[in-house]
Amino acid sequence: MILESLAAGVVANLVYESTKKGISLTKDYLMKELIQSVDSDQKNLEYIAEQLIKLDQSEELEDLSKKGIIKKINKCHELAKALNSIKQESVKNTINQYHYGTGDNVGGDKYC
Image 1 (cartoon, rainbow, N blue to C red):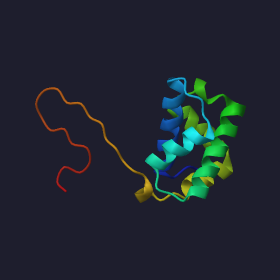
Image 2: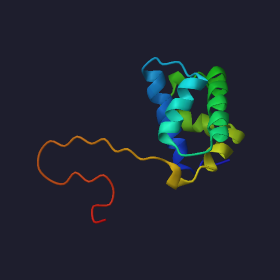
Image 3: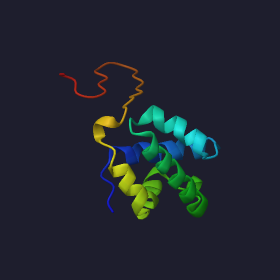
């Protein structure tokens, strides 16, 4: 199954940043972070958290880049299906930008 969801990138980033900081992937931690990042039903987020923990135990995700994590998620068909079920509009976007100098600092569509 091919990942088509923006949520997959958000989840890969969440896993990458957590493991980079040495944070263990637990169901409670993942649920807290997923709820902040993705607007989806509780049951689907719990399933995603459980599958990520299983994937981490079998694949050691802490050694991978964000792209590598997405590739591993893509091989887990049920997890990919759950992520693809999340609509793009349900992903909460937060843009952190730092700007030094002149010019525009645009996070999205400049002319909205």
